[in-house]
Length: 126
Image (cartoon, rainbow, N blue to C red; front, top):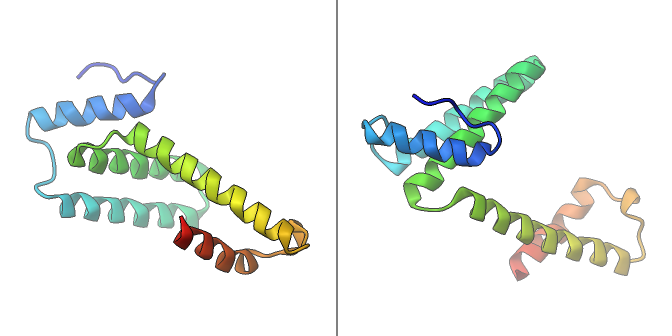
């Protein structure tokens, strides 16, 4: 296998997935890929519980690689999906900040529990 290109990890992950697929090294179904993502998330939870920064970094990478795999299998460009999600989050977050300001409350005075209902409302509208 060729060397992994570290300058664009998303493209490298796609390239690695393609090469693995070429020899049949892939999960049989999309649900199997989803199960793999769940397994990787569980491993991340374990790493977080152990508070081991190196292990946490490795597991986050595994979660991201598994996410690229499901995107690849669905014929979706993960970079485009992430860009779309970034824009969607930004738009919603901007609305959240405006809504909090319209209520005359300082953002720093609100907890996540206070902001969550506003966030859910914004998500439903968008």
